[in-house]
Length: 294
Image (cartoon, rainbow, N blue to C red; front, side, top):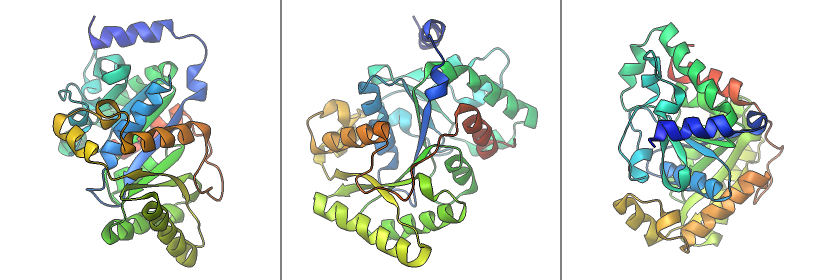
């Protein structure tokens, strides 16, 4: 049975309004090179291990690499939904543990060439996935581009990945500043990646908190810390998620903790207010505006 047939079978056997409880989280960063996509993939797999049907949506258009981290070919993309007869289940690929993922494509000009009606068709078809999923993890582009910011407006939670490096912290703060100005502060949760010790992770987070409180009168919450681990580099080289290739590694243990906090709505350091729920339809509408011309 091919991947599309398997997904259609899962959709046909779903019972109850699963879409009502569907949750969304975006994994983003102020700059590239902080391990954002790796965090997105492994957190999604950790949710899948917790028996949550999870979809990774790779919207880092032009730099989509979720398929590489999962050791899979590129396959079909969201763009293919513009073609007559192509269903949402046809563009969904299946990865380890049965996790699902969709690529946004690697060529931004291809999206620009679509008509407004074609873009609408693409995202109308995505509505069919609502009843099959518990979680959608969105891997966004890094930085302050308008498309990524539209996406961040659509999700329930924003996991902002940074590292202890000064440049990464500066770029993370720049993104926080924009998100606060867009009234998205309640959704922000910080993930400090590649910290040598938990103490370094906590200190890094506290530096972000201090500058945010001083200049923005805002205190972000912390979702967790991921320790520097040689298992991560080995996994990337082998194109296998480290959660699976090194399940007992320090990094894998950290990611599982983050996934559990994400499911439970818990923070290491609580944010000013809990995230609210937006729902699948609003998410799809925002996605249409971010990647097309809705």
